[in-house]
Length: 370
Image (cartoon, rainbow, N blue to C red; front, top):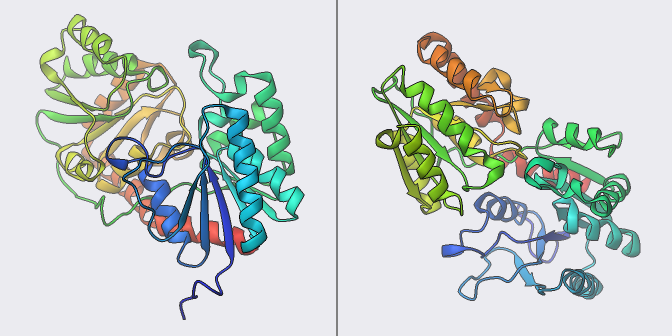
C-alpha cells in the first residue's frame, strides 16, 4: 500500500542548486529525478541555496528558495527556514548534498534539532587541484569545515571510491562511508549492440572548463585520427571554446571535430545512439553521469582514471590523468580487438542495469530509515 502524505516521514534536503535552474530549467536532471523517487515514500522539502527560475514549479516535493548573494546570509537563511519548517513537519532526516555548505548545515542542524544528518559527497567538495585552482579542499578553512562535517554526520555517502580516496589523502576520514553512485534511467539511455562505424564516431560531453582537460582530449584524438578514420563530436559550452577550436586547428584536426555547443538533456539519448566511443579526459570527477549514460547506451568509454572510470576498470579503458599518448594507444588497441570491445561494453551495461536510478533511490531510502 502506498503511503499517504499524512503518514509519510518528513525529510529535509539541502542543495546548493540544481533544481529549476539554468537554461530551460535543466538544472541537474539526475538530482531532480532522484528526489522525485525519494518523494514516493517520504515527504520531501528541498531547501535550495540558489535562485530558482521564475517559470519553474516543483512537482512531487516542496521547494523552498533560500537564495542570497552573500554566502553567510544564505546559510543563515537556510538555517532559519529549515528550523521554522521543522517546528511543523518534525523532520526525521536532514540530508545535505555536497559537503559544503549543504552537508555542514545538515550536521549543525541535526545536532541542534536532534535529527539524523546525512551528507552526500559528490565531486568538487572532495578534491583540491592546485594546478587549476579547483576544489574546496584547497582552502584550509573549507578543509577544516569538511573534516568536521564528515566526522560528525550520522551517515556519509559518496558517489565513488575515488572520492573517498581523495578525502583520505587530505586527512579526512571516518570508519564508514557508503559508496552509492547515481544511477540513470536505463529506459531513457537504452543499450544498443552494434559494430563500430567507419569513420569511428567519438563523443565528448562536458563543460568546456579546465577540470575537463579538453587539451588532452584533442591531443589523444589527433593521434587516433592519424591512424584510423574517425570523427569527434563535442557537446558542451564554456569560456574555452574558442581556445579549443584554435587548438584543433593547430593540430590539423578541425575537419574531424564538430563543436555542437549545449543541447537539451532530452536530446542526449540520440547523440549516444549515433556514437561508438565516449572520450572522457577529466582531471577529476565525482562520478560523471555522462560516463554512466554512455555505458548504459552501449558505448565504449575511454578516458582518464577518475570518478567512475577509477572505480570500474573492467568496464572501460582508463589511463593516468593527462596521458594523451597512452589514451590514444589503448583506444586504438581496443578498436582493433572487437571481442575485447564487446566484452567491456557488456560488462559496463550490466553494471548500469544493476545500479539504476531506482537502485540509488532505494539505497538512499534505506539510510533514511536505518
